[in-house]
Length: 206
Image (cartoon, rainbow, N blue to C red; front, side, top):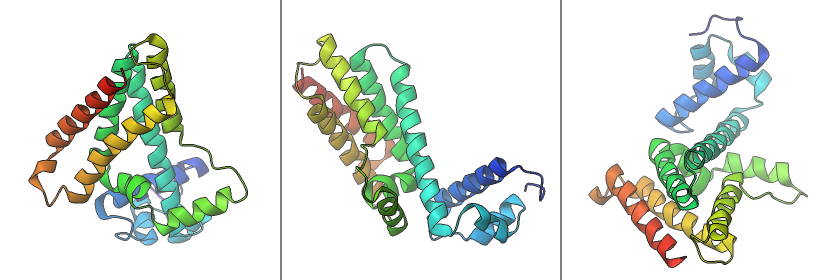
């Protein structure tokens, strides 16, 4: 527990988000209270509301942080390789690992967005053009590089990126939704299956 009053403004917000994320990943969005977060970081519940107007606001911030972590993990995987095709494979593996490591985050980010996320997002983008997810833009860029290098045949990089994303997303989503019901969705099976379908798509795009 953090000693009451020892954190600066940015650190308090960070501590709140860190604890909320931990509780969310352990118990889901409905499995903890603002009071629990306050007790864990050594501040009053009132302090939490100075940074987040309500739990929906806090959970939206947790989801935003999840998207940032997701994007960072994909970027790190791509930067570790120099060959365009290996970059695409590495990003596919990183995508799968994020989903397996953060199933609740993945669920609310990509499978079943919650009302608190949809409503707040709708308010923030009202009247504005909705930007594409940075992670998808980055994938399109990687596909374009593979096409430019001749590793993939020339074509629409957005369509190719959508095919790759859809395939890996399908495998990960099924694992998260049905993994506790079907033995075929053990983590290693998911990894193998995701890369098998990725290779099939890359082969078809050559």
